[in-house]
Length: 512
Image (cartoon, rainbow, N blue to C red; front, side, top):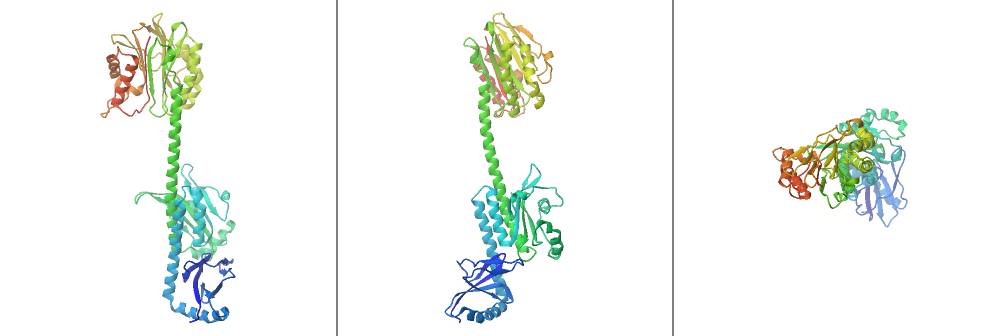
């Protein structure tokens, strides 16, 4: 009728939105005044407001005539047309709104799909959501479970450094309340003025606020809050609509899934790093154990230490002394893992020094206790330890047994003499209670056998323990074999009872 092309736009939420004839065209630039009203800011495009429908604008795209004259003709026509097509207009508004929501959710999916770090995605998400719902300020808080705090990870219109962590139990915090109740908290439009007065110290230009809990839904039955998304200082009307609340809740659900995914990835990376560190620690611990080869070729000796975890608290140690004597030690820290491994490392570091300085086993253990007593007190651990000094020339085995129950001298006929404890474990006793005992030793015939609790405590599917008697029977069955065969047979018997050890397994067998 007029020989021109038009586009119809709807103003709101800080920008112009497409309604009709706007496919593949960027919206005109606009500015927002203090009252929240949209004014055209693109002088190169003809935008005319439709009276009585202040939020609608039409754009004259092409015409052969004078645009001002054309506007005088078109404006009343469009006003009557749109007013008479109320239902169509309402549908157009609804479709435009749905388009914005779908576009926002799709955009956020794209953002979250391209990063596993919420710190990178959060600022972009806040900008997109704020733009759509017309909020000048926004923030995103994430739950720090270990500290009981909600920590800020992103913010719009305020430096994140100025945001303090919020205690989850804070009764005055809207953010904390939304997190605790798992229900979105928003202002009541009928009380906007009163709320505005109470919030003047925050520097907001509007009373509208919306705090939405970020919920992770693992399944229909399992949900838990992981953070809160806050929006405030709204452009235009001083309240968020029900549709906007639902939209922000949908965004929060997306963020919740992404946040939990990020945490799982971080936990997996930490687990991998810890596993690697445990492997390195295990390798270091094994290197701390002295090789039986230090005793020389004339000694038949075998030893094995199998930590239940990557690192453990069991250890053995050998030392060649003067006049052909040999020292053999086996210890069992009262726990396992890193703390026990540190005690074990301290003992091994000091044992060789003290054994070389002091000839007697009880004197060596007194010096050793003085070295590690403070560590044992601080870790609340104790150490069962056997240290024996073999003197083949004199036919004597002199030893100090600080609470280690599984130490034996086994004769060629299979008789097992228990080398009983001479004092409580280190950490549960004082140096003056450490005394030595003595027994005979037949050169080339007797066998010194030491092993830890982890071997006899191995349990089969019926819950039955391997026990000390089965270990000694296994040793007797292989008594004429080399010590390496004896050690292997005992460990195989323990593994047959319980494939996965719950405690460290250590054994020493020695003939000289």
